[in-house]
Length: 219
Image 1 (cartoon, rainbow, N blue to C red):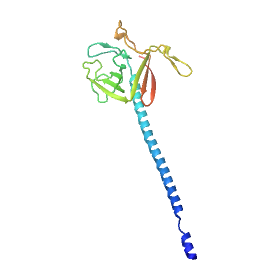
Image 2 (image 1 turned 180 degrees about the horizontal axis):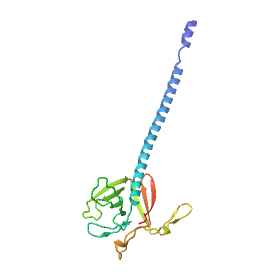
Image 3 (image 1 turned 120 degrees about the vertical axis):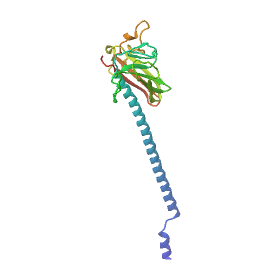
Image 4 (image 1 turned 60 degrees about the horizontal axis):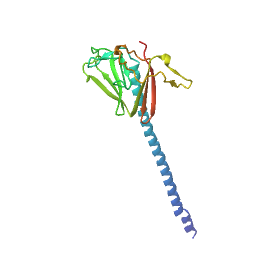
């Protein structure tokens, strides 16, 4: 009799086994949930990082172009004179200008000046660059979609930095800013000077509104 009691006391009861299994299931589920959340968080972080990198690349390209703006009108494929810089709703492109510093690593016989256009089409921000400054053929250009998911592109122009005012909250007074920078009807395109500053606003579907203020180079 004593030996039979000792044998029965050395094992686990059915209740103890069920409790152990229940705890194992709870721990496993908690571990899986935590791992799943961590993986989703990592994936979301990667998506966000990639998106911010795309935005930074697009603004970086625009910044490099605007830093090289030069006061040089051009002639289009119809022989008409286009100012050194034009933009806004009344212009053909949201922003179009002549820039210097066009790299020529292979030493091709060409100018270092280049005409560049920025415009919005089907929620994509495009950069168009021409292979010749004074154009002969409209097709001699390269068009690149540099940023997707752009719902709005707004550009403002300031004639003089003396009119650039704000307040202690770094809020800009837009009283003197223009929505269009184009020649007047009765004036020549050759006489349209460069603006003193340009503000570019992009409204992105996933991030919201982003603004960049650029002071034009002194000619």
